[in-house]
Image (cartoon, rainbow, N blue to C red; front, side):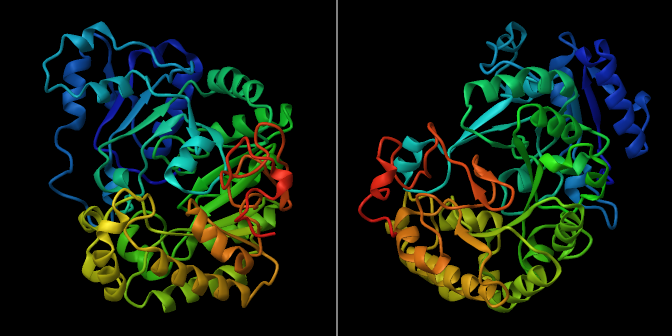
Length: 449
């Protein structure tokens, strides 16, 4: 696991009652070079006090030289909730003063959803973005990477880990597969988390892949980091697919402080997975158009294609926020000034658009450049744009070489190893078209054939 240096170690009292949870805790503490005597145990009697203490003193006044701030986030060890519906707020929380961070207390107790729903057809239609509907798993909240464009990366205060992983795999995973038999591939992704950062000591992917093998399903990790050596020892790594969010060297150095010891570490991790026989897929997501972005991304793509053989490569220009919000996360003067001005001019037009802040023309120009760069090295690798608009897909489908209603991406629920799509009833196509549309008709009048 990563060489984390958490300021605080907190554990929920229920962990003590499960020998497997305690074994997992001891294993992780040992990897961190910490002792069980440093753990503060929370229970209903001291939960308010512990909760206040957890969020106080962050960020720290001093950061040791060579240590990423995200690595210092406190760690919370708990027993995660296993039911789809969260419990009603604990009575003790309701009686606390108004300034008590109740959401933090709920995380300490493990009261966060064990599964997340992403990109349902209706919501994507309403928001005009194209993806695949999927249900993914969560045993962890928070991430040590500290990516400045990410809300948790910039402002997250702590990381929570459910230690009852065996129960999770025995209860949540089979139940979810039974409820959604059409889904063939599942992410173990957490909430704003990067779950391979705590492997192999955490041991979730070993259990996850073995459980998926029982049901003839596949699992993804989705990471912005290079921690993959442990995968070679997995009993069922044949059930794993690796997805890396990647970027250019200058972007990584400027805005992704905890993602690796060198800018192209994730591409080296992809090479290692290729050697292990584990499928590799990359996403330039978010693509950040810094000054000189063309040279930065062209060099990254060249290196990526020279050292590894991805099944797919995706692109997504940074979005999900207006220009002012972006400026609160990244220095706008570090970005392409022409594009920043275009975003300013289009601010009213992009208001409420999930693809904001950059207007359609800017994003299209960037995608076309990235597509051309990848095609220099491989005419056949599958390309796509991630969570983009229907209009963008319609205009770029020919250049991407895929149809927007049935495209192979990085982490869809039906993207099997070997670049094979397996859509079925319940998920016959992407959210480019409404679920009720007859896909045999081409997915809508604007869908390129």
